[in-house]
Amino acid sequence: MPTKEMKTNQLYELRFKSVFANLTDSEFNGLKKHLCLRSYKKGQVLFDEGDKREKLFYLKKGLVRIERYDKSASFLYIDYNNPDTLFPYGGMFSDETYHYSAYAATDIELYYLPTDIFEQQAIYNANQLLYLYKKVSVILRQQEKRIQYLAVSSATSRIINTLLYLMENLGKHVSPKAIEIPYPITINEIADISGCSRETVGGVIKQLKEDHQLEYERKQFTFLHPSYFKSYSE
Image (tube, rainbow, N blue to C red; front, side, top):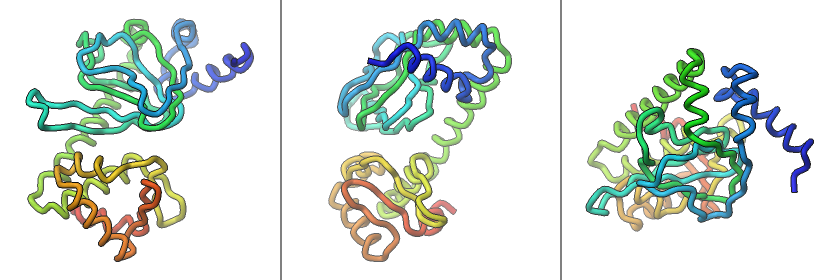
């Protein structure tokens, strides 16, 4: 069990994360009483689409997968939240339910707090509202880029652009040139995002490995030549 001192240190560290930095000390202290730290095992559900939007989450460690099916259950939207991310932004200040489902793609640690408490603190703070607006703009730009990447007829291009999107949003530099995604991403997930069959994805990844463009071991991607993947979006 965390000691009181450990919990105080954790919250002090959280105070200076960008999503909370614009709050006054008084406003943050008001939030602090409601912040809870919790661990989830891989596969545990955080919330389902249509659940009441009662909590916001701040991911400390691990990877969260979000997904949404269309009404026919034939189209699956997939995305991810990585550490030091507040979510969900969708519906903030307006909607009563979540737009999508979220679950732990790895073992995770996160903070959660009541949505209404966060919104009440933010709505009277112009700097915090501007921060949230800018974050939504970044998310919108990422989604526009994702649509651009995948709006091509070539299956190979869609797969490589899917890998590029994940590299840009989840990747970390492990050398001046190479970028690694430090989380497990399956062939099936690439297939779902790109709208291609598992067999097609497997074939493209096999060719990329043979061409020494990437490595794929234990469900983890390492991009040996990121510029190759970026060239597909130009």
